[in-house]
Length: 63
Image (tube, rainbow, N blue to C red):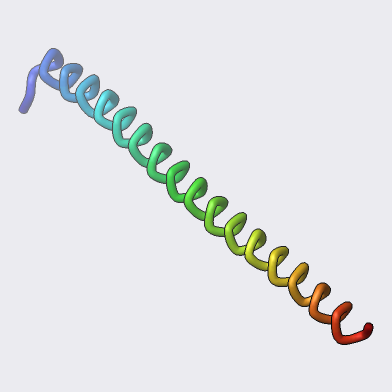
């Protein structure tokens, strides 16, 4: 059986560990979200550029 003081120390240690793990998890989630946004914006940029090129080619063929 553990002493009340030892139990309190364990609870404090677990609470600190939980906060650190939560911060790491949040940081990881934010990093992944930012990477996904960068990838999506890159895809959108390529899509916009291709659409502009397609429109330019259409205009050339129409004239």
